[in-house]
Length: 393
Image (cartoon, rainbow, N blue to C red; front, side, top):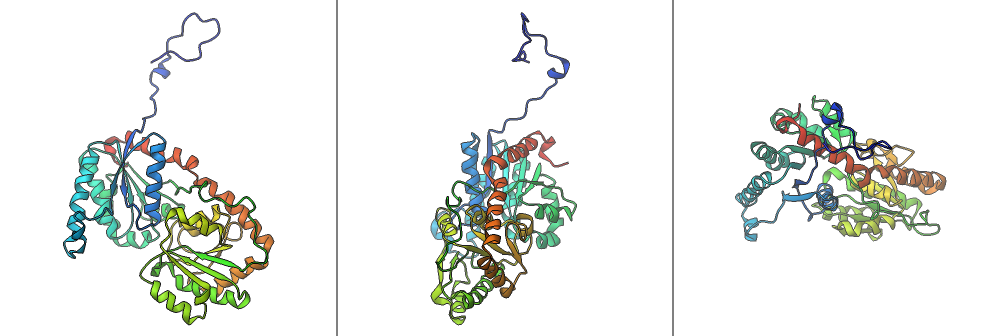
């Protein structure tokens, strides 16, 4: 071992290293990982997180091989062949996993519930295991509780071959803990430079109340309740406006509901908005509504808070682990448009409360900055490298 850098004054030569110093082990250096997960399009929580994480790791000097779970079909016409098109995606995916496992130090697998686990996460774990590459499973998604109740026995053999299970919230740590499965919390990352409040972040006096929903148009996000809440808000604020930023199979039904509620002229459906376009939507809104029925750690809530936008959300899943009712946001029961409308009207009528929530919300998201998450994630990678056989104890 090299001599100490700081020798005592007057010493002609460095003293021999002590036995303790001779036994010191330098932290393992993480230089090359494989990141397994989806990429936009379509934009979504996991895809956006994966894309952002790959870029941040590369900036930090870590080489990243990306193995995409939703890669375009090759050839493109194969995507039209129902029944066999999965093979045109699955075979290249498995081949890419095998190649990557022979090159990298660690596999970082972005995992979700349902068929996504069986088709993409489990094969990645087993291929890495066969090639002796330690695996960190980064599990996310608000449907984990239901999935684990049904499939925990199927998941355990794969999880035993992982060096670590990382989850983004205390909520998911609790869900896995109920099944005796230990995990480590590595939060989602919020770009606090991109999602930043205006310098003078204050309620806009005199203008119409502007609301935003930033969830995909799917059943679990219950955008219909947000529309019904908005119709109630319009009774007190006739000039109020609502922007619905997202895409999905329910768009036609939601547009029809807006017409039935008599608010269609005040509702703007933007369709899918990419990550670069979202900051302006947050900053242009007074209040963001999160009406979901199932949730874990919604990035849209974190991004809204960082942007200085007030949040009214349903009190479901991991949401109360992310925000505190009455301090950083207002929480309401799910599928309760009247309660959601009442919370919006309360924020509009109580500027002091709105200002306090806005300030506390912006302060709370600093823990999701890359500067805070990076050392935690790299430590998980180092522990994976040091694990015996790449397996969890």
